[in-house]
Length: 78
Image (cartoon, one colour):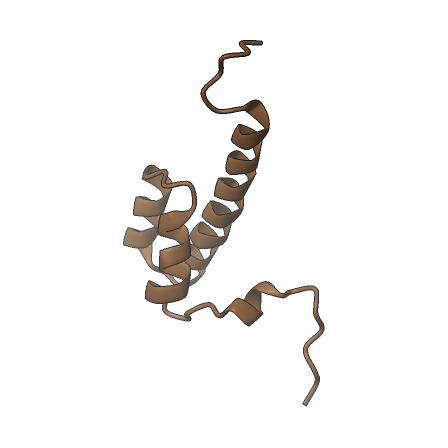
């Protein structure tokens, strides 16, 4: 391993996991909402999750809220 690496390996792994999580969530929602153009753009362009986050919280047909990310908390039944 090169000790003079610009970006440490652990940081690369963290960025990879971060990017894949947001890309998967963004692509899933774009496909579910039949937003083909967004799906293609997110599939082709790699922005380390930034484009996907912007899509999910701003341009998606059903905008995501921060509370939607808290999937481990049970929602009260009506």
